[in-house]
Length: 301
Image 1 (cartoon, rainbow, N blue to C red):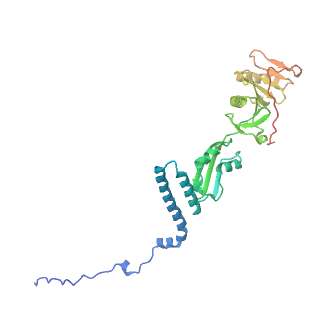
Image 2: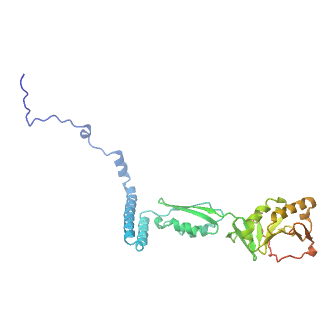
């Protein structure tokens, strides 16, 4: 057998071209999609790039001078971002029933077209919670141009009259409004200094005795110490301090047996547990100075 002949150094193995090399190159679908939308992507890419640079610069400035130039730098970033399209386009409000819309807009202090990065949700939340009707506020800033506001309102509990003025209060006794009182005319009316802070337990107790509640026009706080009931027929019911539940139970019994609440009386004095004092209109004499009362017209019919 003949020995293997050495191959010539010039001889080369045949080269087989791949299918990809044999076919002219074509742009992929992703590249075509990007080319068609290049004009739309430039502003977004510019905004992201500018935002990244400004954030990095802000962090560097904070480290070098934490109390100096950071505010001015952020203001500049907000203005630049606004120029490339990051602006306020819409404000949504949830949970508002009694809160005046103009007070909400004033607290937000923003208009359509303002740079959205210049809007501070934390500051807006603090301002919203200064509104009397607002118990809690939650504010979100979205880079699509939306400011979302959700508020939890204080619930109207009673109408408080003192010194001839009327206010709407919540269950804690906080004043939530001094306007449009007639729209809340079906709320309990409480009268007198300090009545707002002490009304909740008394209103809850009165609800347990509908025979008396339905006839009551107002709860009157006397000398910031005890309660009187002013009935719709003009009769005053004097209740003892700290023994209101027992006195009301006694009053219900007297009404069921004798129709006492429907009689033409000036006052029913229940301050003594073993004694009942009734005064006729011609014999009426107030036991203590009573706050003056006015009627509230209901706006609900």
